[in-house]
Image 1 (cartoon, rainbow, N blue to C red):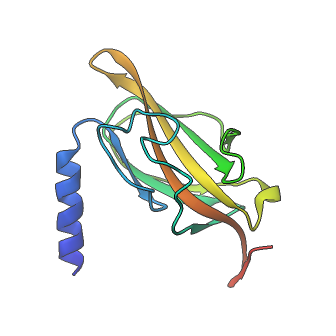
Image 2 (tube, helix red, strand yellow):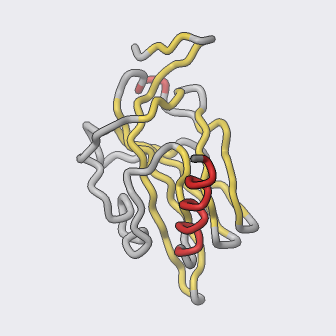
Length: 152
């Protein structure tokens, strides 16, 4: 089963020419042609069906980047207010393509127990033109203390 998943991922990666793939938390979807459409890469963030628990004190975000150099913005908005995006970190610079994981992207402490949209924005160059790409994920902001999950 693992080899099938790995082969599927490799096939998807091979079909992506020059963008990025959000690997975790699970993205709402992926559309290479619409990835440049803000604010959510061509997807409607109001159609949430499942949410990934994301620790307020810092959760991991992993992705495959195919551009270099780029800058990243990690942002979130409550599902109740999708016009107000909050920066979760300062803008981050990255040189080199490949798999990356930012292990401790924090969430706003006042959002515990609330559903949010996590947005990853890549700023780079393609064919000598500036480009901005978007990927989003539904997350529920939680505290994780020891082995207990606290949502409020």
